[in-house]
Amino acid sequence: MKRCHPALIQDFKVTLSEENINLKTLRDLCFNGIPFEGGIRAVCWKILLNYLPLDQTLWESSLKKQRDVYCQFLKELIIQPGITKADLGQSREDVTMEDHPLNPNPDSRWNTYFKDNEILLQIDKDVRRLYPDMAFFQRPTEYPCQLILDPQNDYETLRRRIEQTTLKAQTVNRNRSGVTNVSSPGKALNLYPSNEYEVLPNGSEAHWEVVERILFIYAKLNPGIAYVQGMNEIVGPIYYTFATDPNSQWKEHAEADTFFCFTNLMSENRDNFIKSLDDSQCGITYKMESVYSMLKDKDLELYLKLEEQNIKPQYFTFRWLTLLLSQEFLLPDVIRIWDTLFSDEGRFNFLILVCCAMLILIRENLLAGDFTVNMRFLQDYPISDVHTILTKAKELQDNS
Image (tube, rainbow, N blue to C red; front, side):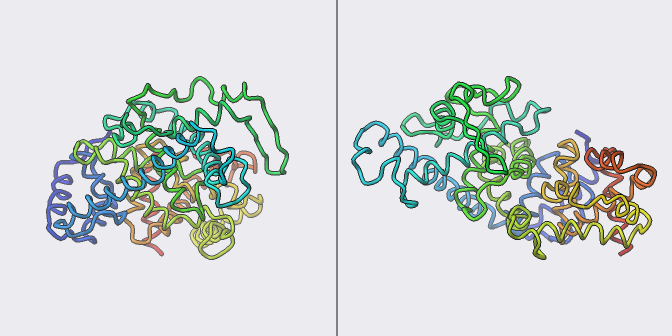
């Protein structure tokens, strides 16, 4: 990890030592990259994502309150339903009781349980693939959630739910045209290729399992959106930043802190994940078209070339915008881009500038290429130096 200049670190320390932090000063500093040293980045992200108040005297009480709330979510949304399921599973009373597994009532606890399992399996599949080129997410966390792992709590854990569901149920895959494929339970045992994450022994949990829990709780608390593929790519860098904080008293609470920062970020970004809003002014289509509108303004020749080749913005900017470029660069570079995005007051407007800068920086390649070559450039972006991209985006912003 690139080390920051001591003078820069000192500037951050001075700004963060104020009893009342000056948000404008902090934003200006963060815009050019935040130091990892001393846990500075993790603290800055918590402020920029509106989790920590600017008044430092309120930090202790605010953190305690939020972390207690998260513990309550764990109890109500994971432990309590798990106890209920464990109790029901031990008796045959469920066959005669009013609420039983085949009860068609949408308010049935069983109905909720099965629906939750569908969401949980999708989350599980996605988080196991999170940054496969890094060992971090497979490693055990130093701070496993004691509430979840407490042997006194006899309940069905998320880990157990996944094992039970994939073993007992036939795997049903429905594709977009509505064709249903049913595979045998034997195939369900091979749900994950051998190179994907192994489950750790009881008493420890991997970082990916923590991310899974965060996403499951978010889905339960936000039924209107629940879980959409790609949210795992948004939560991953936040959790990584907090779970690698050199300050252990912060690192210990990475799960709860990530949950609230992710929730706050999603409150600004969630419209991108809601299909019914795609064509509205707050939806993703409008944002994708904004990239081309800006390109038309900044580089008409390149804009006309892409138009002529019928390369539509949705062919590549959908992923760039919804996932905040998390799939286009290596994790340390994504984190560096997010320093700037989070610090900019109109953070998602700046993201559009970054996308436009990415196009202009490869203009010579695009002007010379045909449709196939250009799509390859856009699907697998060739420049890895994010400093160059951010500098160009700032230049575009200053010339607006």
